[in-house]
Amino acid sequence: MTTTSRQWLLNDHPRGRGIEDGDFKLVETEIGDPSEGQMLLKTHYLGFDPAMKGWMENIADYVAPMNIGDVMRGSAILEVVESNGGKFAKGDMVFGSNIWTEYCLHDGEGLFKVDTDLPPTAHLSVLGTTGMTAYCGLFKVGKPVAGDTVLVSGAAGATGSVVGQLAKVAGCRAVGIAGGPDKCKWLVEEGGYDAAIDYKADDVKAQIKQHCPRGVDVIFDNVGGAILDDMLANIATGARVVVCGGISRYESGGTPTGPGNYFNLIFRRASMAGFIVIDWMAEFPAIRKRIESFVQDGKLTYQEDIQEGFENAPETLKRLFTGKNRGKQMLKL
Image (cartoon, rainbow, N blue to C red; front, top):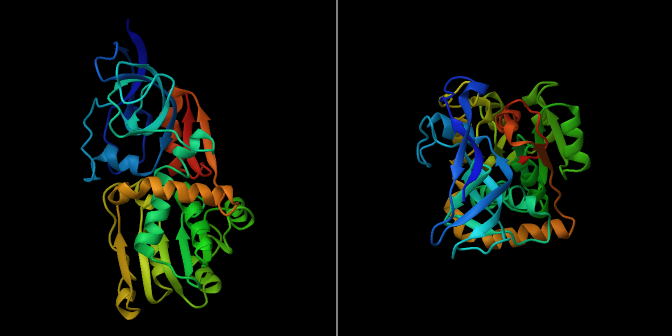
């Protein structure tokens, strides 16, 4: 017995430009029965992250390169439709890294059983890579202490919105940078931030100085470019700069030139470090439990932006780079 499945293939490398429709190709393929130790999985949700463009470009060297014709990679929540002695039983819901496909055969490597009192989609958002990135970047690299001022760029995004709330749990003052009055209003009224800076409105550097009068102790940067430069201009002595991503570069491709204000790291005796969240993968189960308790205790809220229809996967990915998404970007099949 075979199962027909649609899949999205990589059709071009979007280097030096934004993602275009022609970068993907929709095909149909036949999926056979699972062999010994395999499972037939049905995808229910796909998750999207800005880093996926780097995978498509083959710029990110911490993952295997993607070739033209490869099935696009991503995160997913899946249902075990059949199990031939596989890692999970029929009917189990699982999550983890997978591909853009409606059905697939899988041995279960890198997948985990959905185990939460929150909605299952939380495993792609606040309990998924998003939450892990926020937690590990802030606490493992940023090392905030009570009373610190934490400044987050891309603060209304899936990761940034969690970072600010975790900073508040740690007893810090949280200031977020986002685009537009609606996002800034959400940050303060629902996202737990003490103040929000609209980078589309006025002089960002002046706004940072206004809201961070003692300087910034921890920067959590998701944007890079000119905004990172403005943040570096107002760091406090001993500041820690966490480089998580650089969404400003995803439209132009390549790697951006260094910030003009980097010499401030010397003047302020500060440090600046990047990280890859999988370095702490062994700690993920314990971190998930802790974050889930923050949600249940009302200390942390999270947003999910769920689009619908497998045919809309490329368009859903593009939402990340146009500022359309609110919170974790997902697609329901």
